[in-house]
Amino acid sequence: MATNFFSQQDLARRNTRILISLFSLAVVLLLVLTNALVLFGLGFVDLQSTHAQPLAMQGLPWQTIGFISIGVITAVGLAVLIKWHQLKGGGKVVATSLGGSRIDAASNDPDERRLLNVVEEMAIAANVPVPPVYLLPEKGINAFAAGYSPGDAVIGVTRGCIEQLNRDELQGVVAHEFSHILNGDMRMNIRMIAVLNGILFLGHIGYYMLRSGSTSRGTLGRSSGGKNKNGGGLLAIALGLVVIGYVGSFFGNLIKAAVSRQREFLADASAVQFSRNPRGIAGALKRIGSYSAGTRINNQNADENSHLFFGEAISRWASIFATHPPLAQRIKRLEPHWNGKFPSPVSHAETTAPTTDSSSASSAAPDKQAIIQAVAALPVLLVQSSRQPLQAQAIVCALLLQHPEFEAEQIKLIKEQGSLDLLQHVDQLVDTIQALSLLQQVQLLQRTVPALKQLSQEQFLKFEQLILAMSHADQQLSLSEWIIINFIDHTVASHFKPKPHIRSSRQTDFSAVQTPALQLLATVANAAGDQAASQQAWQAGLSVLALPANTTMPDINLVTLSSQLDPLLGAAPLLKQHIWQTLLAAVAADNLESDTELALLTALALLLEIPWQPVQAKN
Image (spheres, helix red, strand yellow):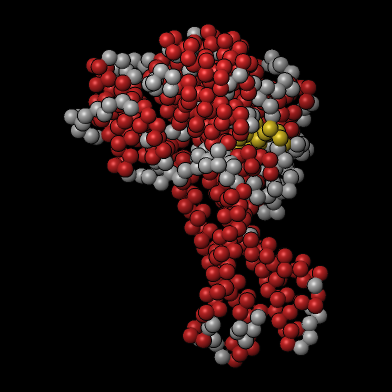
């Protein structure tokens, strides 16, 4: 059964609310324990007198309790905000913190090239921008996806993963990580890192006090008279905070594990939906079972990021803290008739050699080939060019050369605001690019993202000014120009600009997004063709929205539509699903799916971060 990614995104959203609720309860528990620790540790409440006579509520030092509570909440809140600030750069921050180094999009290393090809294929299959890929220097077979949204996502893969897995198995692992992207797990996972950092912060304070005390015994241990009591009290508080930190760690890891395990089962199932090859991910899991290094990650930051990974990143002393289900359970769900035996370990040469056995033949089945048919259709020259930063810029510029009457002016802009080298590459690529269908052009644009993200900030800002000037050369904005400009802004600009594309999916009421939704519907209906077809598409969309048939179609204004993408992007998953079903109904109204309509839907799904697979839609 196909995964309903809208429902799973909504579940991830609800899981985030549960996480925040559990975090709030944990903070309340920390408040109670810390207050009790400080009140008794510093003598605000006499422990002996409470044995003789129970302390009445009105006898408590409420002013002191208030100050302590404010201090705890402030400390925990600052810890969360500091971690959140550290993670605002999205997936690349997580990848580098784990020791990952970015793989050059044009790498010719055989292992790296195989991995990048698989990531490109799965990105097209999942209809998300092709993400940058980071390689972790770890022997264990593992991988992760991290980021706030598909536009700033990265894929991280260990060295052991690319050396120990064959292509089908590697594809299964990568498909699993793309499932996390579309299931809405990435944003929840990053928030979990920040939230759990706050829960553990009081324990860090305790450790700091103990370390400080060990170098300053006069403060904690060698004071005399009245100071000795206070010094002992501070030592007790330090030890107590460490204990509280362990309590926080216990509940924090319990929360993290509980949220994570079920999402892993879902991502395994969704991976099959992308790769069309259950043997791929099942084979990878079996390979892990026979591999001595397993899925272990040795980086010091592995613990706080353990829920991001494909497999269990660190050893756990109890299964209730495991962030992933047991390997055997995961394999059984994918292959119910599995005999429970793990394959013998293989050499690196065996995993990279071309396979000709029956299992390889099954992985090359027609339905799997359908996933990458659009990828294979792109000329090799364009595929290779999309991986180089300068040539990727040339591709975008060539895509904007849509009107012969304004081409001279646009070429002049490339020469003046770009460079002669850029112009030369545009000249080499433009004829091949203009021969592509609009859908192929959108998919080619997807491929340029990793290379464009390799530009420096100065280079990108200069490039951004150039393409904006080129799009304004004809004093009007065509549909293809609108797609290109908004795509670059959504998927690449957020990598360089201070304000990333981080949004909360909170809006659940259609009335709040009705105006932009109708503008979007009108744009899709207009792509249907003549006036009669447009009206038919418009009416089909209104029917899904349960709006009156006499609702007037708004004038198409792509500039206005650009500004209206944000409220639609911030819609809750199930509301997005409703809007998307409206657009699909409009396209299907005449039972003809034109290349323009399919390209527009593909672009809108990318811009609105809607889980939709265009190849499936065509079948």
